[in-house]
Structures are given as structure tokens and as C-alpha cells.
Image (cartoon, rainbow, N blue to C red; front, side, top):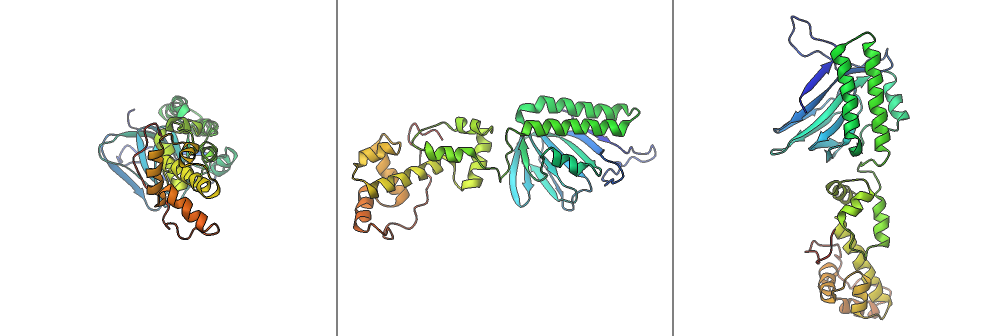
Length: 310
């Protein structure tokens, strides 16, 4: 993808400076101030502390863009897009050794906010439209063509092309946004299937996310990786069985998804702080209180058992 920039206001022949298209226009329903495509192969950083007067749309076509959304640093992958409100600071960068590209539009007008609301596109949220990259590219090319030809009805034609892009993005994103606030449906699924060794890719596919993005969203919501979260569920189940049943350690190990009782015993001690047998003894000695068990039972990273695929 080549770098291209298109501006509604053209430079004067005697002025080689870039035109000023950072405009808020309240007299027209929808105006495209400028648009373009960027491809980066070297590190860069953009930090606009005051924001712009217009709306800003970014659609990542390849690679990954590190970006701040509010106070949180996150990343956008191919197919992700973000809308930024007027007067909102924005900051993003590409680190050393990577490359990426994105398509962009700045637009304004008294109908702009209402259009986004109708399409259920919330500025400040990152959405995924990964399955629609070719269609989005095509619609951007149509918009670039309007800037190149500049025929009669130029502003109206650009507004129409922008609307088509936003509609396409809205429909594509309906399969799932990937903001930090998004609730993963697989969390509830894991609570009912924590004994199964489901591959990471299958969980990510349930959410229409890549594996790396799924892992990132999962950790933001739970503070744990999917593997750590599943282990925590298994350890809680083991604690409940040890405290409330007379089942053998081998049976409890299998009931928690571990066929190797020796691995289960070692893992339980690492996570809970005492072996399963001692945990049971303490629970039976004090059935209404477990304050004598170790206080720190938060999962610690350990090597995964063979067959654990998260």
C-alpha cells in the first residue's frame, strides 16, 4: 500500500505548505476534510495533545498499531478501526522492527455525530472488521477517486462515499467489537467446561478474535491469561471437593481435568500453598473457617502440563 493524502482544500500554486483541513463545519451536514492511506516501515509516533476539530477514523490494513484509548495503551490489528471525537487528544506509535498500514479520514458536519449514533459506532471504542478488509479498501478507493477527479457535486459525493464506508464498518463490526469493556462470552463457557483442554484458537474463534487479541482482551478483563484462569477454576473446584467430600485425591484430580495425579498434587501445592491432603485435614479441623490456610492463593505462572493447550 502506497502513502496517499487527499485534501478538500487545495494548496495555492504559490504556497507549497499543506492545506489547513483541520476544520469544524456546522453549516453542512457531512463534509470530508481529508483522507488517505499510510504505510510505515520505520518507527514513528503521533501525539496530538489537543485533538482536532473534526472526527477521525482509522482503519488498520496490516500490522499492528500501538495506541492509547483514554488512559489505556492497547493495540490495533489488521481489520480494527477506531473513531475519535473532535477535540479529543490522540496518541499512537509503531515500535522498532515492525511495519503497519492504515486508512484514515477526517470528517465534520452537523450530521456527523447523528450518523455515527444511528450506525451504533461509538467513538473511543476499537471495533473489529477483519473479514471486510477488501471491501473497506475498495470503498476507500472510491473516496480517493472523488478527490482525484473533483467533479461537480464533489462534497456530496465524498459525503456519500464516507457514509458507505461507515455503513460497511458498522455492519462488519456487528459480529463483535473488541474494546476493553467488551464482555467475553467465553468466560461463562469456561466456567462450565474448565476440565476440558480446549485450544486457544477455538476460544478465540468463538469471540471472532485472533489468538493474540483474545489473550490481550482476556487478561484486561480478568487479570489472568486464559490458562491461568482455567487453572484457578480447577483449583477452586479441587478445594471445594476436598472440603466437602471423601473422594480420593486421584478422583479429585480427574474431576478437575488432570489425569496425572502427581502433576495435580504439585500444581495444587504451588497454587494453594499446601498439598491436597493437608488442605483437606485443615478444612475438616475447621469446617467453618479456612483462615489457617495460606492467604495468598492467587495463581502463579508454572509450566503447563502436556496437553494443556491454552
